[in-house]
Length: 295
Image 1 (cartoon, rainbow, N blue to C red):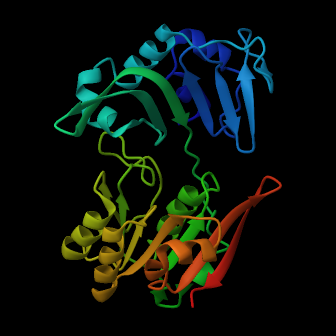
Image 2: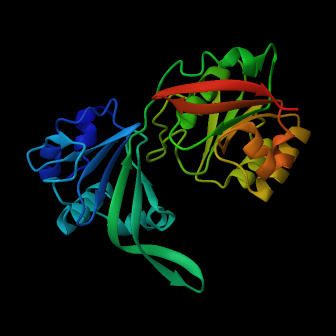
């Protein structure tokens, strides 16, 4: 979705304020009720003034109103919030272009279960970026002739792991049958049944399915040679990974962390199952990827 189309997801008054934003570089736009309108660009942020000017300081910034939040939510839900209750209950919406909008509000509980969010007070539009070729430097490490190394990407937030996984899936699909297990609709960005990103011509997508269950579903019914998924780490994920490997399937996935040792301390059993770790970091505003053999 180009910048002009992203703007169409905002109420008309905010479109004018945000018309000067470079959406090819911006990563997030945040609306917080009663607080300044903000745009995030990787390592920096900007407050938006009533005249549309950007400043690192909040003084004089435009303050988000209840009408702004309600009107934008209505636009995002195609004027039918009821039809999007499942997504609202999960705390996010995936919109055209594969962009994701996180929601803040008051949780409504029933029998100990979250049924929906009410009184929405914040919207965080996370702008998805597709970078064809982002994985080119890593592919010689991951793809070993006629097979793929079981690879774990280790990354703190906002270091580009989702963009990298997306391009890995696209690249591997030229040689292998790939299944993407996309629990939170980030990798494929599915919108009304259509993937919003290029994942390659041999890639199947299980959208909105929990990772552990989705990996096993894929092995049993889709005969993948490689599974790609995002952000594993739960006990059930470890069990599923073992079953994936026992079935002869390869796996490329990610986990939150800052380095190999921090993941080893927290998820040593899971880490030991992989052949290769790729540690992502951001230094001086530049993303770096360092490959390490898992011992």
